[in-house]
Image 1: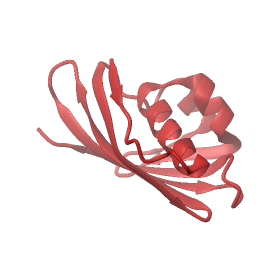
Image 2: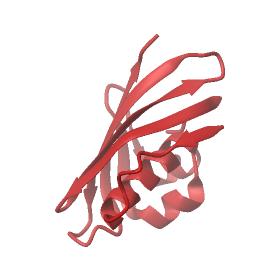
Image 3: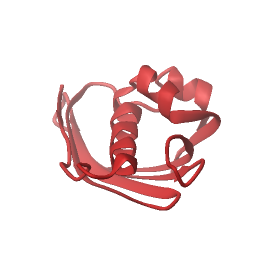
Length: 122
């Protein structure tokens, strides 16, 4: 699997955290998810369902057969952040995504809520 990051996070720890969280959610990286999400965080896949943290840590919100993940933008301001990009699966199916996060505090070290949009392009 290839991951291409945005390059937009050099001077912003919150942008980096948001980008890391997007990659972890999509790839199912439970170590990073455990570190970045608070114990009562839920992840909403818009148009689908809301996953409690325990389900997210079991990979229920991740993408199977991922071959390429590209992060286009990672931005943050105050207690919110957004990350967008696209990915491709092994069968060549492409998706676009936009994730919106609310931090637990303005310091932005832990995410309290995530709302994720996933759109099939092909």
